[in-house]
Image 1: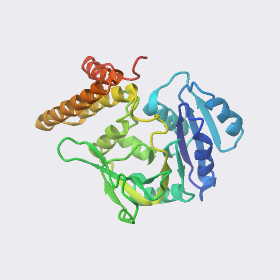
Image 2: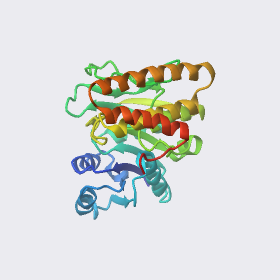
Image 3: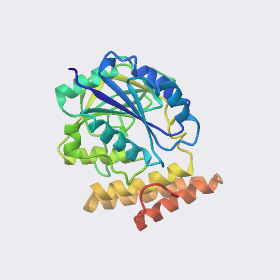
Image 4: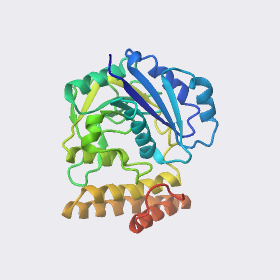
Length: 302
């Protein structure tokens, strides 16, 4: 019997994205190996009802409805546990604002069988399919800031060679039960943003490598699932979670240099937003810093 792969989609008000994403998954070359699990994070639009009507009776689709929004990390963990309890040992964490090439999952699975590492694909912009959003990633040497390789570059074949990298973008991550036994599940303190950064750093510390698989192609409707970055919520989570992630994985002089960079970065953005009259954005930064100091994690304004 062929090994099953659980494709885990987190839905939060994703009405406009879900159907195309699911259809592209079911068009996969290894469709018979796939099971799609949709974890709904207490959506407030009609996307859950639409999912149930469109896909609820499909033999390869299951929907788990959560009673509250547990964030991206929490919902992914629910999906992994649900799948593991049904003896599925391979998991693809995939944003629902994506569409994939028909052989993408086959390529990711093949890379995993060969490398026994976390596997990430080449991610292109959905509206500009010759433009790279992420071709693997790495961390800067001093402050450990994640950087997406190839960001906004035209795809001219410059990232066609597979290889190990340092950062696994949460848009699309292929992993297994063996990876999770070493690195663990995602940290639910983050709720939104930086959970993939923290997981990448933790994976390395656990002896788990990350492999970039350029033949697996994913198209991303960038910021579709979070509705863009110019929202107070996003400014809050980036501020708080950046501090949390760095405190967890940096020590000594490196952490000191990070704090200096962080203060300059957040201070500059706060000043810009104040001059633009975006006082809610500036306030969110300050609140994120305050909640980090107080140890308040999880969902903001819960």
